[in-house]
Amino acid sequence: MRRWNGWGDDATTYPLPPSAARYLASILGESQALPDASFDQVLARVGAPRLASHPGITTDPAGRLKHARGQSLPDWVALRSGCIPAFPDGVAYPSSDEDVHACFDYARKAGARLIPYGGGTSVAGHINPRAEDAPTLTMDLSRFQRLLDLDEASRLATFEAGVNGPALERQLAARGYTLGHFPQSWEFSTLGGWIATRSSGQQSYHYGRIEQLFAGGHVETPEGPLDLPPLPASAAGPDLRQMILGSEGRFGIVTRAIVRVQKLPEADQFYGIFFHDWPSGAEAVREIAQARVAVSMLRLSDAQETEAALNLSGKERLAGFANRGLGALGYGSGRSLLILGVTGDRAGARVARDAAVAISRRHGGLMTGQAIGKTWRKSRFLAPYLRNTLWDRGYAIDTLETALPWSKVVPAAAAILDSIRQAHGSAGGRVLAFAHLSHVYADGASIYVTYLWRRSADPEQTLAHWAAMKTAASNVIIAHGGTISHQHGVGLDHAPFLKAEKGAAGMRMLEAVRQSLDPGGILNPGKLME
Image 1 (tube, rainbow, N blue to C red):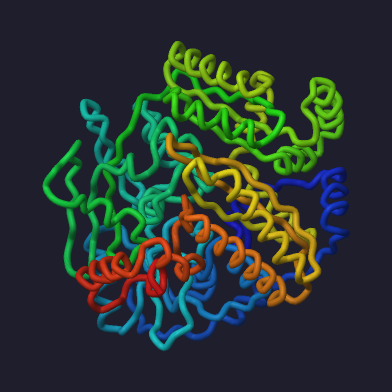
Image 2 (cartoon, rainbow, N blue to C red; image 1 turned 120 degrees about the horizontal axis):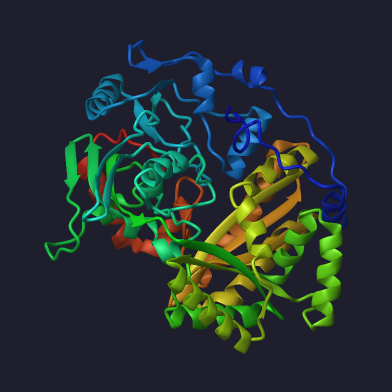
């Protein structure tokens, strides 16, 4: 069963080994478990619904609570404290385009706002009702699960857009295919959500980001249906798919998506390569990308993340061996770890691996085989569960990310991390902040930042600490010319910074499209555009 106030399935845990707890205490100070509101306590705060009864809508308080928030840090603070300013007034579970239309009609007549809900994994406030006079109806798309068509000649698969990652891959694997889109939220996030937020999977260097995989589909808008044909290319004006990608439910609801699929790979392997320092690793990764080496993933951790990952694993003997063995080879405290992925046919994967390793060696890289890569692969979707454990121990954890040209990557990463440390340090707090390059391109890379700090007994103070760090980092990102979001979308949390990236004219264009497709303003208010 899904956790109502945390990440993932409540049967899955990620224990914190004693050595990992000691490591965190040495950096952040001793933590203490803080009480959270119980489900029943929060349920008692769900007020009476402001929607008239309807056979297709449930106003059950438990269902409304479970659809009230996502997975952002403000969402966690709200759910764990019970201080949730607004709940949806009802939840609909459509299973057809006609049902979606019926929800539009109902919302118009009721004067309600409508929020599309996929897997509830948003980390930027995409699915949150706002505290306003109008009632809110959440539209849960979990009944849209089927593979409708597989055109094997064209390698195009048509899915209902509410399908989550595992269900999508199971249906494709049965036919010998894969989409290959594996964000960290893969277990619960949905195809429609990936499209709506311009998601990026961990092996996007090989399979492509969602905008490369999304070939077309069907969108229901308040002003009528929009069909996007799966053309391999077109010069017939602007590409309307690009208006739906990243639209976050403001322009319409994707009910069917046509995606480009591939045959299941013969090889899918991950290797560990250590560098003396992060800049050396970044240079190697840049050269690999610009040489167009056909790898599937290049994930380069900075020194702090490399150290933290080893210490949080709880494997003290392995940590000691790594420190002694790598230290003896000259890879000291500044060492940086690259996880290299190669995917495809066996011969091609071998060629790509050898080419990437050769470039890495020219930059001081030390190839250590598949052991580290296998460990990473085993925990790639388990790592988010550590967030539950840390919170219960009294620690808060959040992430943010951006993408910039190569000339700015290393200095921007340092400035972002410094801004987080200074923002919390000015409040008298200690923070553990680190980064990795999560996705790379010929012209730049994505910087993915994680930061941990001790949460306060007062949830408002925890939220204030987060806001100070998040704002400071966002301002640095904007100052360096980076995107406010490489893969997490905009939602509520990034909306104040979007104008700096799009400009006034760009914002007017977005608003004009929204006004054209949703003149009544019923769809997901406040998200993407304030």
